[in-house]
Length: 214
Image: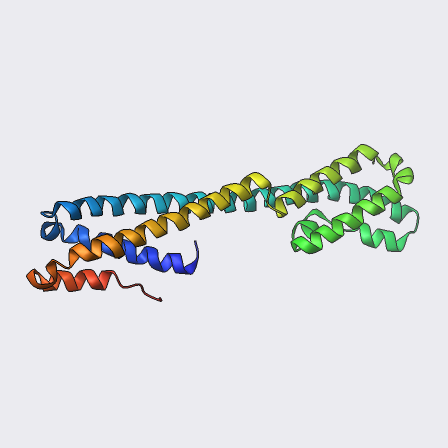
């Protein structure tokens, strides 16, 4: 939901609250009862679409964080073996590159994390022949690659969740348009009947219809 929609929703909520507070003034007009019910339903739909949109974003963010942890854990284990090999063979530069703990990896910014993990995979593959006696296998490196691929996929937003988020966004836009049409082309016109019969109520309705920040 963007700022324009947030401002419009605040106005819709204000209209709904105002009408709920002054039910006795307008509920004798059947067409307004119908319009009010329609507004209530549209606001329910907006809230539902908003929740769906947010749930899609939370799912992606949460799963990406979890996947980053998996990658960090696996890379940390392999780095320990690589660091030990480098230390025992006086390979100072390699030892320095391998000296990256779980917390160091996990706390990197995502772009830096991607760079470091890719570098780690290259180093592991380069020294695999020497790492076998340290408990490192080609399958472990492949597993790290696959786990990293999943992280990269989540970072790019998997298709099904991108679609879900887009559908919720489309639903929000359509429902906001329906609410705008209901108020501007229907309810506002009927509310004019109170302009002279109950000026105070009519003035209050117009105040509720004001969009703050527009």
